[in-house]
Image 1 (cartoon, rainbow, N blue to C red):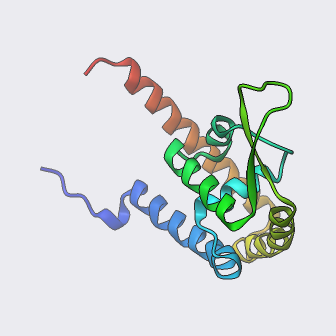
Image 2 (cartoon, rainbow, N blue to C red; image 1 turned 135 degrees about the horizontal axis):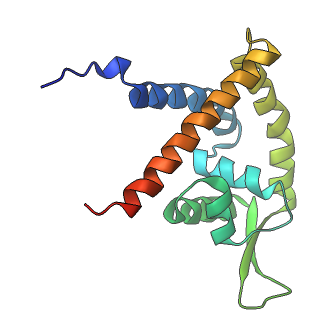
Length: 154
């Protein structure tokens, strides 16, 4: 049997990297506005457009349906979002930020952008681009593996 040193295993390192980066940003929105990671992510997505359906939020946030549903419920309870019937398609419900939600997002954006700069501190612009490019390559490989594994009978 082969040995596995967990701390040197790439998927484990990615998970540790993700938690550190995510937690450093979460310190901002959780402390200031008591938002969860999912609530913050949904607010950020909603900030890019006037409204989205729940299924569009799932696709754009990389969150599952249950997490999106809980995030919407939490944002509604806090008064940061509301659910409306789409004016163009009465069968479709859409979620949008309230005025208070837009103000919270406007307060948070410069703070999380500053944290992003702190996280990337010490990396030259070309190193930042290289890092993003390498991350995209690994994501592409992972996506391909997922598709291939669905196509392969077990």
